[in-house]
Length: 553
Image 1 (cartoon, rainbow, N blue to C red):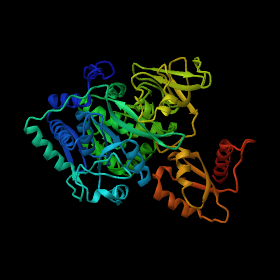
Image 2: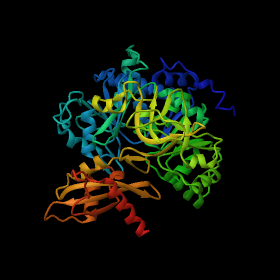
Image 3: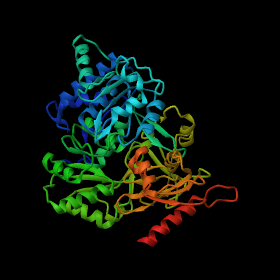
Image 4: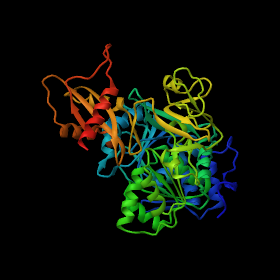
């Protein structure tokens, strides 16, 4: 095996011109018969994926989708998800990813705010009625001709496309669109080429205001996908486990983008099941994967119950929460990984800002240290004065360069708050850089907490809680959890004369928000600790929550 860290001709490209469509076309030319995608009972070679992307792109164009239009996708991980993104990229349209764990209100907000012209969605999955929620958001879709939807609640939406060949009134499906696109191709129709500086994907992340914000990224994210491949020693022909959600940058960039950039095989998983994951690794000879500590703990439990041949594994990234030395050591030894690398990144910085290396000692990994992985800048600054800090000093981590998002879609105010005039992006995270150049994250300026790798924002959860009739005010803080890293702890003040049991509150939460946002602990309070000006003292509540749980341990 060549040393992927020093001899990587497959990672040398002209990043000023390379697009996703161009990268896929290159792989289809070099490796036409190689499997590109496996999952959900499907398998696509690179030649087949390239053809499918062309057909779907022309099918979407026939429905009026053009360059810079938004196409939302509400589907689980599967080969068709990747096909849809590649089609949009080839067309010059922008894919808007929608979390499959979102409920109606969360999804409706994203579809409306993103100006999505088309929604590609599942009808039913996991016993969830996705089409039913779509009908509730856009009841006009039941009878509207395809491509002519006029929805009061979703004014930009014109078409609903169901996955595979599923049929329902007022919709079309991916199979039909591909057929129409194939006819257009046969007639000689051509598409204007996309440009590398164009937006190619919008991934929504929430902020302290509680409203999701759409981080726009251009085709330039391929450049950081190459950086990730370099540090992880990913090569053409590697097999990547695609269990991280494709609607998240961790899936879209570290897995999907690496696949079409290098010519790897992506094996998708519709949902995380550790036994199934180990079976797939053994059967498909997976060499690359990654995840949060929870994924690795689950894999250790599974392989101890039922040994598998995982000698195919080469490297994996781990992030989203701290990893303990015992877990890290067990993962390396029992899964046989040649490299287990700590990663730090966020939606706005293309998933990965820093990585540890193959040769780093265990303490580097467990302290989640790493070095910047590409030709961009990372610095630590005093959050108040903006002064650059020296080695070992703790301040706000900031990033500048090609990995920074284009901005938040239709949210210039929020964009200006995080991207400074000189190009530095304010991460909101606290950290330091030591004398050897290792970045260590030590905390967060913002109040976000991370539940099993998913960012949970108190303001957003509090807004959803306060929509419950009995609740007057809610404050949510993050508390430690052994398996998930952190979970939510909600302090609830009820309206006078109202009652609400904890179990009933949690049941209602599960109906209105993604499961990782649902508080695991609830405490009813008469009022909140406040400053003299009436501002709630969150740090007092967080301390109380942690002390309560510690006393119960």
